[in-house]
Amino acid sequence: MNSRDAAPPLAWDLFDERPILVFLHAFPFDRRMWRRQVEDLSESARVLILDFPGFGESAEATAPPSLDAWADLVETTLDRLLGDEPAVICGLSMGGYVALRLAARHPGRLEALILADTRAGADSPEGVDARNLAIAEIRFNGLAPLADQLLPRLFSPDADPEAVDFARELMLAQDPAAVIAALAAMRDRPDSTPVLEDLHVPALVIVGANDELTPPAEAEAMARQLEDAWLIKIPATGHLSNLEAPVPFNMAIKGFLETL
Image 1 (cartoon, rainbow, N blue to C red):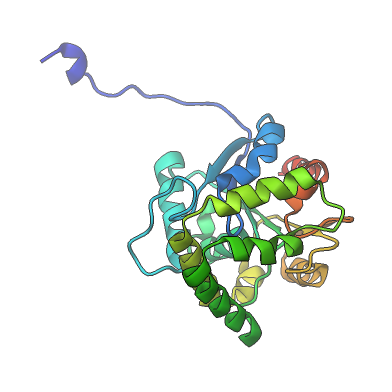
Image 2 (cartoon, rainbow, N blue to C red; image 1 turned 180 degrees about the vertical axis):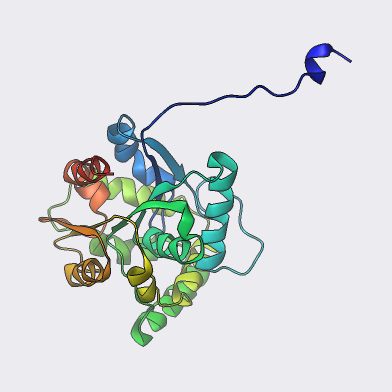
């Protein structure tokens, strides 16, 4: 045996005091939606972007879809990459739902929490019906009708057409089975409102002022329930605030990170 093979591992320390910033993507996209955040925030933080099961380059999960299971998969990934080092978790829309389940199930993982264009509550009966209709639509007609219906609700009327086209490209690139699984997982998710009051880390809540799907009133309610929260409303911006208004979105996160 080579003597080098038998040598014990070296002790080491890696000194990098920048926070770890983990981005959890919205429905029905993948980790590429964070490209402007990766470009602009990588000097301020160690940035990690993930694909949920079946989206982007991630394999489809074998278990029945649930946001709790996805939160556990995120934790398993972070444990493998970071050990027990806490991270700043940023989730937008569906990513915010998963971030709240992560906070509920693995609170020690969070150094801080960023909730963007999302809500803590479960789906209303009308919301459940809409998820079921969307599932049926995709099964019969694929993703194109969903894109046509959803995209106008994700952006403000004056959004940059390039941002809208990029969102459409990402949406149509996803596996329809993964999109259906995500709809079922969101439909069946528990109410995470109690998580907010039990959270004892700094938080940032971001919302587009013109967000139709999770309007500013939802963001305001979450910020009130959080122990230590900033609330940032981005003017003239819709639901995908990180894509439509990347400069103010990134500035809000930079300012927040500087307080940690």
